Length: 286
Image (cartoon, rainbow, N blue to C red):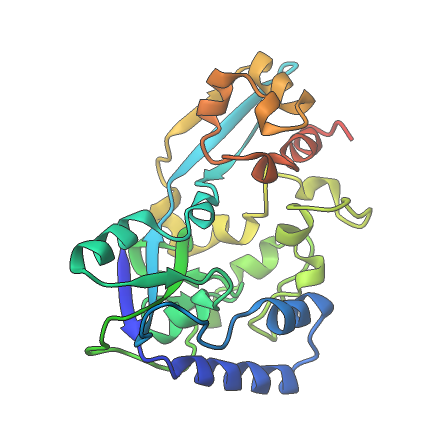
């Protein structure tokens, strides 16, 4: 875990940066929705004296899932689920704050990735994903309003990894061409991460693009900054009976108990909602 306390006025800086970005770029509906409807850019009301914004970065739990179905195999990365949202933040950080006698409030839609990059904990990749040193891009980031005083801190303009200037592997490997060489932000409307996590699968998505249970990893799989994170992942093998059960289940609660334990990253029906569809697509069943 890495974290940093920042003064509250960094939110003003982020708000100004977003306004400049929106003025200089032709944003799609997805980007506009995030900026205008979702981001929390003002200090929320809390029942204590707010003195700082704290951003926390920690590595995800990763594994490689191998599915067997009618004599065929498909595999994909599994990463820990979104359970930190349901408990209101990252439990180890919250325990640490309690031990310090400090108070905090988790703020889900505060722009945590921008805070982490500004604080020097992360850098952007060309895919607009945050990379954090040895953790690579497989990280979780959360933000909190707290009552702790700000000590020494870093606040800088957004930075992109130097290697991204000449690499381009993510651009070549993007199945929907949501990444392009002349800009460092993703076209959200055609990014498979968004398409593959909800809604109907549009006809323009090529069949070869379907490769995971949720989201998209094509750019992260080929990124040199992730080489250490993706080497020698433990495998979780699902036999044909288990794979068939997943394909035919509508809800996580429909899945047999032992199989649920193996699918630790899908901890509720909301997370599991699109898994059967995406697993069928991985095997070309629809």
